[in-house]
Image (cartoon, rainbow over all chains, first blue to last red):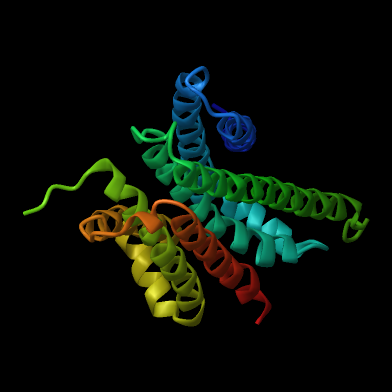
Length: 161
Length: 102
């Protein structure tokens, strides 16, 4: 797979994971015996999507990001790396840990009768939506940092030209 | 030895999330301040971020299992654990978001 495909897979899995969390949020809000099986399946899909996003993004970051980092740092938006990437690469772990936590209350036998469990699940899902959207936004800023750096490089006068 | 039930994991792993999210943030600051630590972490698994991630994930599961051995009363199976998780995300996330600014 080309390198850019790995990066797109990271973003795609992350966005799909966030959408799955939104769907889960409303399903849990209206939790009943009619939708409990869907909630459990969607929960596992959510965990899988965030793990895949982590693996794809992690591989790309470790193996292929260095040249792009140098490009961004030399461009007009060096803070796209210095701030946004530095924050994104570590805040992502919170999202991943919440994804690992999610099946614990959702697969609990008392989920249908316990209002307390529902509160915990909705809190976790709400945080995951906020963190997922933050990751998406930060990713877009980093990509834009790379784009403006490339454009600035192309627009720079050629030495001796 | 008392058996751990699935319900014990709800509070145990919630507390683990709180502790690990703060340790995650402290590690971010420490890596920036201490080049030796960053290089040591990079040497361990090839990249400091990989070591950081593996450590955080393993710690989450280890502490989750440890905290799940503690007996909590019924009040913990609701708003209290939700608050613990929320506080963990705010403190852990907040430190990481603010730390590059200082």
